[in-house]
Image 1 (tube, rainbow, N blue to C red):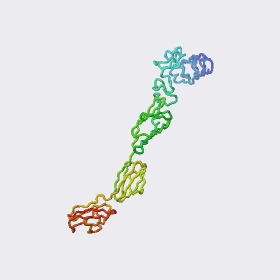
Image 2 (spheres, rainbow, N blue to C red):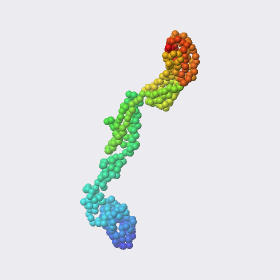
Image 3 (tube, helix red, strand yellow):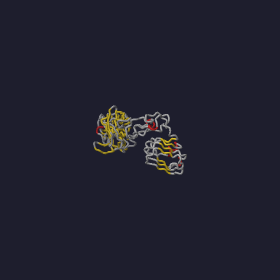
Image 4 (cartoon, rainbow, N blue to C red):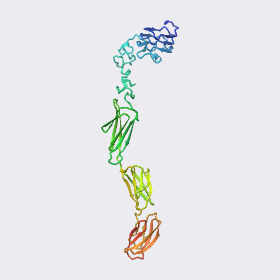
Length: 386
């Protein structure tokens, strides 16, 4: 039967065949001869291998070589063969891959030319001792534990975003209560080293009571070659600070430091609660402005309101006529003039123009006089008449 030139299909699977030669069957298109344990010789050099579109020769543990027309074509198109089986145009060679290991002992029959092999005929490019998917000749980490993810070099690998570091700085000066929380997306036996102190964890670790300063945090994984480092800073706790300006009975405060929300008090009465760093409140001369933060230990920002800074008489000394500068918010003001002996000379209400009022001592003798400016809190200014 096997010598029939017209044979198209041949299925001799699951038999006890030792040797099979179908070199005379040039019309063959389907060949199946799997599961023949004794089979150790198979010759398919029929001159028309490309016509065979279905080919099975696997599960033949003693078959190391199949004689074919074109080994390269057969290797590319006939894939249903065992790992120890190779294609050749001359299977009488006892060492097909030329690695000095006889075919019957060679478990890696297709060793690339020139590569050094072990007693089983396998080179480092054909072995993966740690089963990480990277062959030994490319594996820079040859003892990777089973099941871990590796990179192209065969080394343990974690994504760059595997770790998240949450830093909390010192809450108040001299508390030394900085905190670091390390979170990992993947679960492993991690060791975190912070300035020579080590901490173990698998997914999350909280490290407390850190003093203000700069720290280097390095994370390793037990049993593998891996290290990832970070630089963090624990900031010192701050005391409240800010700056303020007062214009037209309104104080504007800009907070430089302090933890919001801010509570604002005028004369001990709370008038505002805000998260804004810049805010304004109504004030009067003599008010006490206080700003408290969310943390009592940061202190209190204080501002005494003075709306009469810059009230002066000019020229002083004067020959008679003189002016007094006043806040621009005033429209008119009542001023009393006294001698140094407290004798009232005049009491008038004067219009305020551009922050100024004009007065006169022209009809008074030389000496020292007192101008009483009747604001909410009266102000006294000495005038010298020449």
